[in-house]
Amino acid sequence: MPERQAIIPRGMEEVYDRIGYAPGLRVGNTIYVSGQIGRDLAMQLVEDREAQIVQAFENLKLILETAGATLADVVDLTTFHTDMRDLPLFMKVRNRYFTAHPLPPWTAIGAHMLGGAPGYIIEIKAVAEL
Image 1 (cartoon, helix red, strand yellow):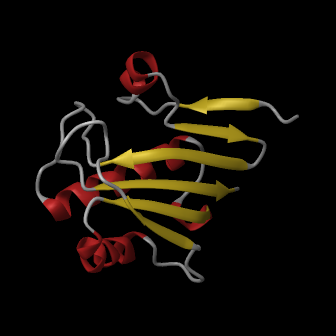
Image 2 (cartoon, helix red, strand yellow):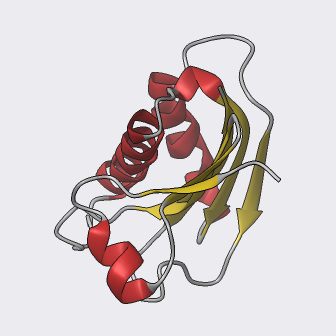
């Protein structure tokens, strides 16, 4: 079995220590990124809808960069939405981050609640291959 390495960017240590999961895990050349929500590095909810989606993508990007990857390395994207009517806004933001083609496969799932607290509208999970 390939070596497993937790990916914990600076500022996300509390996620690992207090909440009990790795923001990312590298296994061989594959990076698995835990679902990222619109929470800043101070563990605070970003309230504006577009800004919250941007923050979730920034969190995803930070984890990938810490692992030596980029968004262009993403081979699978799964998103969870508390309101599927936000998909046009989500896609607008996503297209700012994913500019390389082909775009990765994407699955969008409706969810009642995210982040373990009210107010979170998006969660983004990804797999990247180096």
